[in-house]
Amino acid sequence: MGDEERLAAYDAFAADVRSELAATIERMSALAAEGKVKTATYRQLFAARVTLREIDARLAEHGL
Image 1 (tube, rainbow, N blue to C red):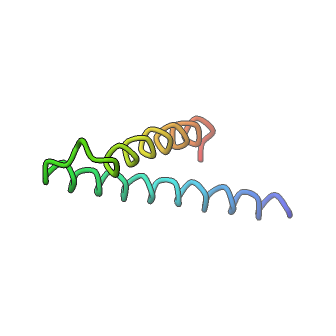
Image 2: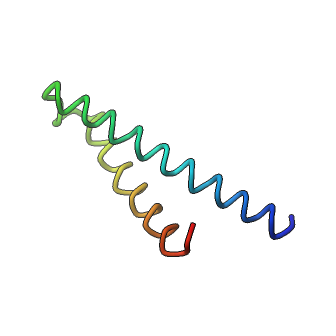
């Protein structure tokens, strides 16, 4: 795999992470609007959001 292919793969990964983060936040907002912030699903989404934000921050630190 060449440098250009590797960069394209990292860019695709970064886009996927940001897309999944946006979808997670959207689902959490919908559950919160329904008053379901104590459900297992909401808590799982919360954990996923924390993880995705950390990955996104690390990607941003490296200019991706």
